[in-house]
Length: 509
Figure 1 (cartoon, rainbow, N blue to C red):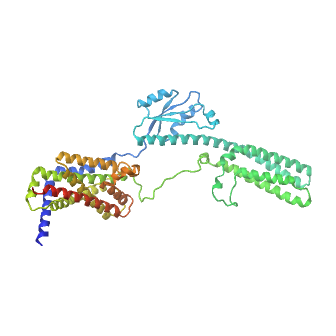
Figure 2: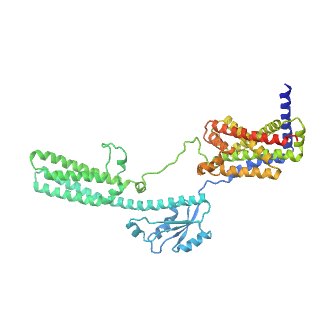
């Protein structure tokens, strides 16, 4: 019974010692709590999600017909486009771009009509001077949107022209209806000559309508063929109605003038009249369709299955917490044993009945308590100031915090036992921080790293903690016991190495 009691007393002595050492440095405590919080607060308040406007200069050939149109409508293509004028000298425009007077230069190609006639796309070139890959991708997205808008506007002009042409078809439909009525009267009066005459007139009317409707019908397309349609409710497009009319007229011309056929012919004329009415209605519907909808019948809409819509700040908070808490623990651990050597207490440990395990256990317990309190304060400040999302369980979040602190302290103790001076310990902890920033998934997604390099990532405690924090805080998922087990395994492995190194250091000579 006395042996376990002595063990607990020795460990608790380290807790009191480390707590007193920390409390004697109030500035350090304030810096450790407020420093990380202020960094995240400034990031959250300073980040702007508004798209960056691009000052854009256009290079257009002097004889281009697009000059007046672009001058009047340039800023309507893309919301982020700021029109900075139009010149014809491409090299002068590039010089202004290099000097920072503009952010982008749009070069409109010459001889667009000849290029398209040769079955080639006319290339609109957009120059930029961005060195940041993310901002360069932003310019590429801006360029794609601009070119898509140009194509859409051109198609919209064609659509409007086709709709205008459709309005000129309606008099032809009325003429065909008049011919149909005259044909019906001629058939009722049993006048073969008049019947044939009006039938020929109807045939010419349909031919004129088919010719005039060609361009419009190509634009309207066959969207209804992409999905199942009820034939009874399908409105049909003008081309289909005309094709049906043509078959009816040809069938009428081929019928004999026998009494048995007259009733069928009369019924066919009635159907032709009904189809002409449907054609007139279809043309009116075609004219009423928004020209922009005609050229862009589909639009995309992106939605998330997450419970909340996350901002960029929300996304980065778990990563910042993981890297920051790991760095604090590594720094505390890295300076701990070095400080004992510098103050001379290591010689006292060697002369005392303390074992290496008791020294290490005492330091683990003291720093775990302190860093856990620090994590709670930091989390509370972030929750109050930035309203960070917590979709999962606070208990699971706390368990992930403890696992991260345990693994990170072990790494810090190993670095402290390898370092000979305080400056070396600081350098080691800074190297660990840099490795964590670049390889934990905080700065770059792990999927962007090669598999061979990704092995480094899985040796970093912050990598597992970042995954745990994101799953718990942002996705609301239960804790992943595999990641927790990995953190515990890292902590156990580094604890074993630290114990072996400390036992060798404390060995009596």
